[in-house]
Image (cartoon, rainbow, N blue to C red; front, top):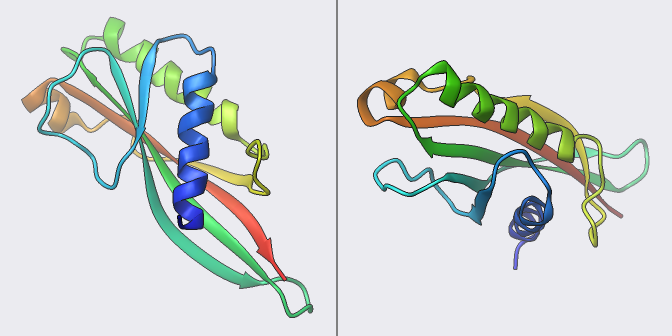
Length: 141
């Protein structure tokens, strides 16, 4: 299995084990699923990109793996429904920021947010969609 898939699986496992303010189902995927209906909150963990940089003057590399973490929930778009979902996004950011994944030598070195909500999805489909990008760094000799 590729390194980015292993890191993504570790993120899914960490989400499943976490005590967060809302129950959720976390799965690894390769694309957002906008056309399906589900109950509750679904979190899609999507492998994204790889950047490779030189590690100091040594003949070794840093590999920075970017993982998308997307919250999807069916809702009407009221403040009472959206506020807890944006709060959940913040909880997820704090859960991973600057921590090493258990069982892996991959440290989260950056957390970036995607736009807070996708208004077109909320307006036309009643689907809340918002995400984060987690960047995990590994080193190779």
